[in-house]
Length: 261
Image (cartoon, rainbow, N blue to C red):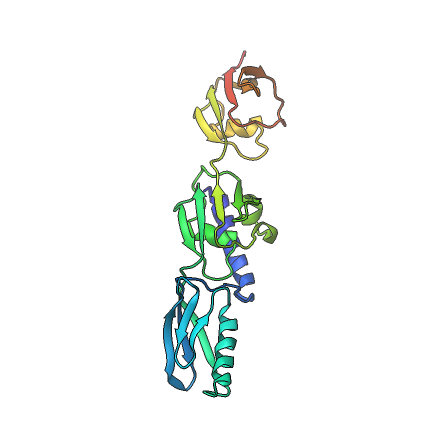
């Protein structure tokens, strides 16, 4: 990740963390989650409970409770009501904390530092997952990501806008979703430039910027004498002319010739 993108990523993390600090968690309990349930003033009604594969837990005095799909607050209310209904405690103060998040997973794939599966631990957004995955990979990640929903729907995420603080590019991620950061397209430059080779194609990249990416012209190079080879839809390569403001395309091959003078 370039210095600019890295700085933007860090700033966006701080901004979205501050915004989410005010939002209530909408995490829904599921199989594998480990809960710590406490009842104020009643030590014998404090228990660690693992949600079973069938989505249930067992709690003293009450017995089996179906918890899958509930939030911690909803479960607190349910246990309080069950204790009152059974004439055990009239106005119990119940607290439910999630000790281990195990039921909901998201995949982060492609050009990140640590691709893999990550557990959701509350209301989680795209930027949260990218942070868990170590951020986008240095100089190889595209400027767009794809969020593939469990339902099969997909959303394109503008990473540059996201890192600049655009909240609309930071949707909530759900269990079974996949975030994919594709490899950035490349272009190739050789001839009279300081550093011939393949480079990351940035958005709306012009000829001048492409030459700059290649380290600039040599003493003999001329920006006016550049041949651009480009493949058509059938895969055939053609020489094309581009002016200064024209954008370089993916897989373009630029040959910078010597100046005539």
